[in-house]
Image (cartoon, rainbow, N blue to C red; front, side):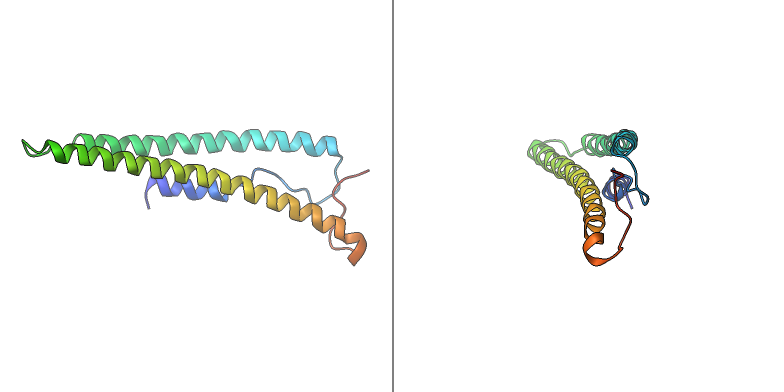
Length: 131
């Protein structure tokens, strides 16, 4: 298990919202969500900094690896491969953040949907907002 994959998994598992189980006012809900989103955004930022550090360590390792004299074409191949690996890793970071956002929105949507269906199908869950 390496630092990049561990941090990517952690970002994917994060939920940016806190779904209340009891009814809340819209103002209270918004204020709580703003706090939670800010805190989780800071955690995501820390995770991406850790990933960036790991990527820089990979770059240092590759760039400091001695090559045989006269093998300059291998050096350019290593640089190209390194650039491709770095691009792939940053794409995975963006994918992880997107997954985090999508799952957070989906969980919120499912909670709102279940409370809106409660009037039709009986009591599934409590209503979401106090009116």
